[in-house]
Length: 124
Image (cartoon, rainbow, N blue to C red; front, side):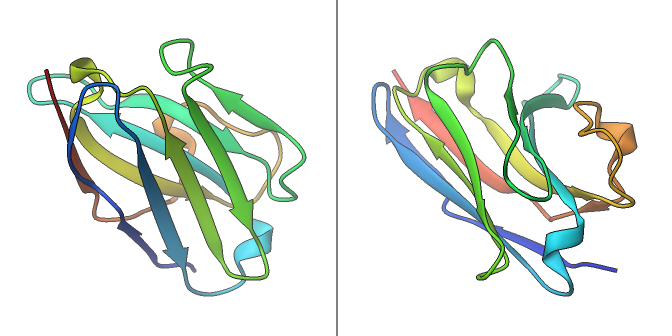
């Protein structure tokens, strides 16, 4: 079992940047990791995912070229670097872990463990 704690959210102006971190307990290197977000009144949506080794990454089309997912297995941390933020990026951002591995999922229901979320607000 793994416990996930997100940090790094906040209020930023459009065009700005934020760096979200997800600190994990347990044996971090056996989990695929993902980031999802949920805006008020909307479904939770996929943002990015990374394989347990870090060799493979996936980004939603809406964030491709602006957001980058990474991980440091030595530090038990997954990171989402968000640049060129837009007001439509405003949401609660969640990190998630998937075990056992297999294919890297981009669907929220395939992740077993979730953090509590961190609010990101982008003002226009």
